[in-house]
Image (cartoon, rainbow, N blue to C red):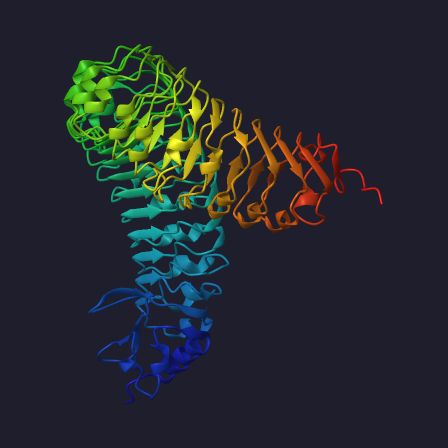
Length: 620
């Protein structure tokens, strides 16, 4: 007997002919009549029938894991390999076409079907339900569409159903409730609608359920609390409503470690029986309509590491028991109705790295000094908390170096202290919308890791040059966002771009008293996509080097004293979506062509000497 069935050989050659490019070189080695020896093919010992096709995109060798690609399509003839138990054509990127439409009618021995990470289109064949031996179906990260077939509920042996990151629509078929051996169901990032099947709680083997990033509506089924071994439950970013079904007694959902319900329309309160979820590690309930107080026994969740509650209507005070959650790393209760004072017991949270209490009704007056003694706290967000007076000096000597500090929208006054220059690890600094009146201290030059600086809407004066005028500039290739707008800065514009500040993506200096001209060095800011210098006293010609800023999407220069012509090089700013040159002293014809002719008259009005589209025609 030949070592390869003629039918199998024909089917494999048909598959080979459907592949135009194989960067791994495996397919081109398919020569000769013994297909059982071909790379990626496994045959049964007794019958020499092909039982596995293993051609994944990721291949490991002595040097590690590397990615290969195939371009082509899956030949429908693959279904004639009727002894197949495993098909692994995963992660090949360029593999296109459809799932063979008769797959369920021929491959009845199939146990594992891995087609994920490709470019497949079309729908899942309705006859998929005939694959009674199928244990794993992984079709994620393709461009598959249509609805999930009802027949999928017939796959009684299925343990993993992975359909995420496709374009599936329609409902989750109620038949999935029959998949009692299913360990993992993941359909996130599709366009599914309708309700979560009511009896989902009868899928007793389920350990991971991810229905996030769809358009699901209705209530969270109460049967979910019957899932005794579930550890991951992600229902976030849908249109779910009603109250959350929390366990009613100890022992229910006792393995649940990761819970995401954010970005829904859920209502009600967080009850005391929330703490029956004893294994919780990461919880996000943000952006819902939850109300009431936090349960006083919250501290019983001793395994909690991340807790996100932002953008709800939670009220009352933070319970003292929170100090017992010793593993807590991240706590975000921003944008609620939480009241002060803060419990001193929070000082016990020695592993807490990020604390966000912004925009609550705390009325703190001052930041509690024990904040500075929390040994891991490096990201502090206290925006809109009613903090008064000067920037607290104890922030200079916190145990953990500050990396992110947001004290915006408070009632701070006085000056920016020079000791802020000792924040040698600060990445983000936001002091905007306060009443700070001073110069920018020279010590700002020491903030080498700063990436986001927001000082807008204060009463800052003097020069912006401490940010720009030194070789050891804070930009050092790291600062990407800077907003100094709505202040009283009067000088320093000439320093912009001089020290190779190439990484800036957003620069807003509007509504100041800046004079002089835009320096040619601004042309070095290759990655900038928003530049706002409006409402100043800048003048002279618009520099032609602005044409080099080809990433620009927003350019606002209105209400200045710019004169001369609009450089013809502005036609190179192809990504420009918003342009305002109004109320200057510009003259001559607006360069004709896109994108300049696409902007409204309001982009150019108030320049008496300008003409041409979209304004009135120029006089000959």
